[in-house]
Image 1 (spheres, rainbow, N blue to C red):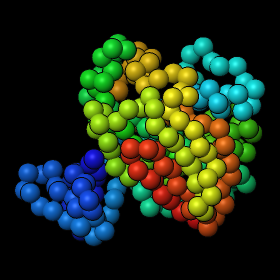
Image 2 (image 1 turned 90 degrees about the vertical axis):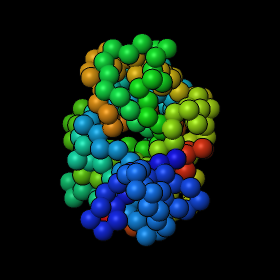
Image 3 (image 1 turned 180 degrees about the vertical axis):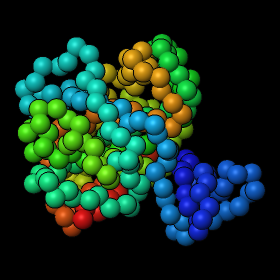
Image 4 (image 1 turned 45 degrees about the vertical axis):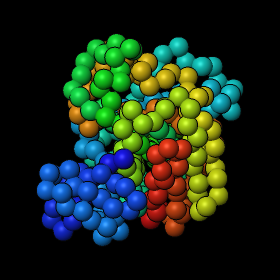
Length: 243
């Protein structure tokens, strides 16, 4: 797995192995993981998110499975790294967590066919689609509710596409150590290659762009002081405190 880090004023990508980070800069430098700041693992031009993309989530609310993916976008300014703090906005009285599998795009692409999707994937990581639920309901559309600074926690690290099976991985959300979401990516309605074909048919995807693939059942409320964790089997755990 690999990630993006800061050491003093130096920002770099590095390979993570047993708590040791080896720089990708070609200088062979190594660091202890705990002496580095873990940054968001990519710098996207956009974060493309999918609504209602788990069969068990649709069943939870008695909703019909959509015929096509439901898309919305979070701005790059909403991104937050592992152990960063989610800022609870004063304009909201209800902020929710949403555990998601994220796809990191590795090549600029447009109109990619289903069977070529893996050619453009750098890897996978954890994502939390933090949402001001009361504002989402009030506005009738999702931009304000999804776009606050710190509302797109992602990380901690990227698992290369060749080393991860997105069709069968446990996905969980915990709040203060209590499990709130517990499902499997086998419940995805639209799988990763389908999403890449669909989205790239609409817009050009740039290197570092993120596709957040939707959340399973069990979405719920966060409060200041909470610690929320998103854990995906084979990837790791993304952890953030709400303040």
